[in-house]
Structure formats: structure tokens, C-alpha cells
Image (cartoon, rainbow, N blue to C red):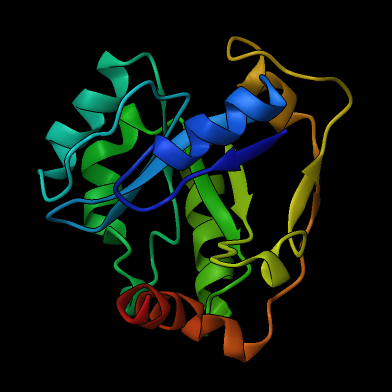
Length: 181
């Protein structure tokens, strides 16, 4: 199972899901006023630049799961600890390992926050291109449905590996490629 969470759109994830079926989770990474948030199991694109609270409400309205990526990464628009605390009751999954962080202690801090607050832990490759796929993933024992996803994730085995430093620049390279196309 793979979650495709492009920034500001569910269109590509829906396209891939139509080709490959339910093993693709349709998601989106939104830029809120407070930082990045991911919605999983979405049906339509959620506008960016809403408040964190309104974005979470929109994810829940679609029956989706709220996933907080790189929450403590100030270099990449994490929502920060204060906003984590404010939204704690609405967070379904909290990323404790992001393969593309530069300051690795942020992953340790995120894990400590997740454990102290009792969050379900997640991880992300934060790929941004095909060379970055598969660096970090969770091995699960059975194919989950939307209803069993959280339980299956909680029982999973985490495999974590950092991307090379150059991966930090993949989003900028992608932007330049789009601009030149």
C-alpha cells in the first residue's frame, strides 16, 4: 500500500489509484497557515492556505485521516509543537521519521512527542521523485482497508533510512523542471 500525497492536489493519486486499485491511498499535502498537513483517504482536493483547524475539519469532512508530517522541521514548514498541542485531539497519525530531514534530531524529537502524547506513529520517505522511493516504509502483516489502516499501521515494522542530502533539493528541481517545460 502506498500513499500518494502531492502538494495541493489529489488528481495524480486518483489517476494512479484508477490504474492500480485500492493499494493506492489518495492523499494530499496541504500548506496551511501554520504549516504542512497531510490528508489520507481523500476524495477531492482541499484548498491550501486555510487555517490548520479548517484544514483538519475539511479532511475529517471527507472521512479522511489527519497525518502530520515533519511537524518539528522549521526548514520545511512543520506546524510546530504549539500547534501539535492545540490540534492533538484531531491528529490520527504523527510522523516520527521523515527520510528527507536535514536536522536528524528533529526525527528524535518527533518520536519523543508522539510517545509522550500517545500518537499513532507514521513515517515518510517524502520522496518528491522516483529515486527517493523506498527509503523508508512500514512492513504490514495484511492489506488494510480504510477502517483497519490505523490498527495495521500500529502493528507494522518500521524501516527507516535517510535520503542523501541532495534529496533536500528535489522539490526545487521539480519546480524548475515544470517552469522550463
